[in-house]
Image (tube, rainbow, N blue to C red; front, side, top):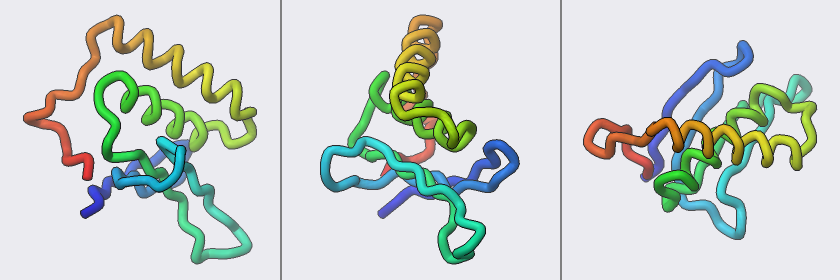
Length: 102
């Protein structure tokens, strides 16, 4: 069963969900669509990810939500850099207190 959360990112309320993703994608960002109100802003993170890989994808997808105009390669590099820095500073998920990942 998916684990749903809601966050406001860049003034937009996003559904943040951990779920098993098909294919090679580890994360996915669905942008809001002003022309089609049925398309809601959503971020999906593969629930099988753990550790630094999970942190990197969480940051990557959050960067997409903050900066939709930025190129994929730049977002990928930013996610990796931010994850490396935060991981080096000791940021970890406390598995006992963390919301379920799926």
